[in-house]
Picture (cartoon, rainbow, N blue to C red):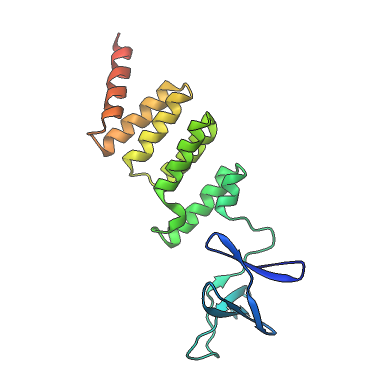
Length: 188
């Protein structure tokens, strides 16, 4: 939640919604179909946004920690090219919920290929390395990273990643062909 021009807004599921004030410290969010209010955690003194229970309005929950001023989401860090901060944020999300929609392997892979199509190989590599950190047991992650390194002209790192892809999926034809041809060149 944030204020802009004396109006309250909430970032919710990729969009911005304007909660309706129903009291001095109470808001209704139609997209959630919930009433919310601000509360302070008694032990940490951190501000939270709490969902007001329909059964017992006096019940206090600590549902959403209020982000500190200047807070940036991992996706914002990623867009700004702050890959280390993005990775730290995504790893924190993974620790809390390993199935979160915000750390899907396919999404990062797709982003990496988007950069490759634009010939932004360094960006592609950074995104795909982040994906490998989040999904270290995925053959697809290393296959894609190998391809990005190859397109960027780094045949040794391409070889290393294709080899890693084969460790997880020995039937990966592209990885096998590259590893075999690279090994053959080395032996000549």
